[in-house]
Image (tube, rainbow, N blue to C red; front, side, top):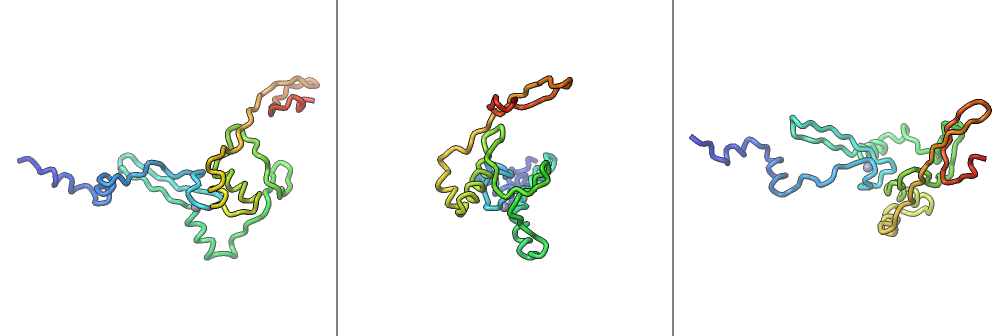
Length: 161
Ligand SMILES: [Zn+2]
């Protein structure tokens, strides 16, 4: 005897059925630069397994933000960036110097800080503009005083002296 289709389908959980029938499977996955929340550092937990046909995405940043409110004595936001190379605090945001275009989420937060304006205002004003473009780095080997060294040109030939 054939099993009715309805019986077979009933082994699928109601949540899966709903997702499939109303098309609620997400088109995009969350990622650490998706700008879908106002957190400064967007952090996403992701666990997935094809044998379970399930993906667990967690906006850790938003959950942590709620935890920070409960434990203010254990949280500090420092108005500076500690540069491990120079061993000094830097209190002015750097100009973009990455090789790729500046990630939009980082650019919005940079502008919000630079202009001391809410993130929502920055999003509204800059959503049609392009973030700063990347600067290609040209690797160059130089022979100097008996040793080879690798330097990178950041579009400035004068940097080789
Ligand atoms: Zn968040």
